[in-house]
Length: 112
Image (cartoon, rainbow, N blue to C red; front, side, top):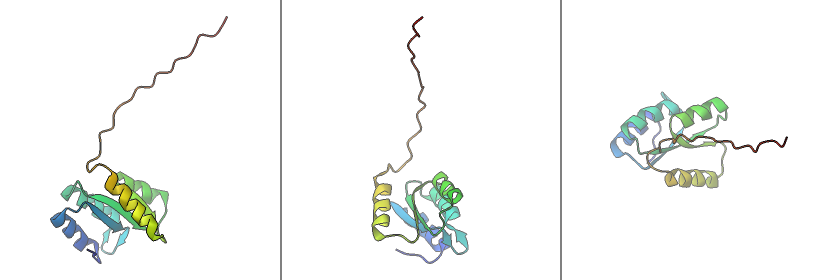
């Protein structure tokens, strides 16, 4: 299904809880990043791929922090979208907790 504005898309995600949503960065009255934030609350298992003409690092970082699995910049080839969708669907539905790792460095004694 396709929606021409963010409000309709958000309502559809709330109602259907799809496995994946392909979201444009610019959605008219609702920003795509804001829509994803709100949609994740309503449908936490939905995965998101963002499409945008903007390739600014700030936008990409914000998108990742809001739970976007992939960020594809326009113009793009169909294969790029296909790959992004496949990667997103292969990720776990819920983010895995970050495990705390300890780093141990072993150094041999210097010969005297």
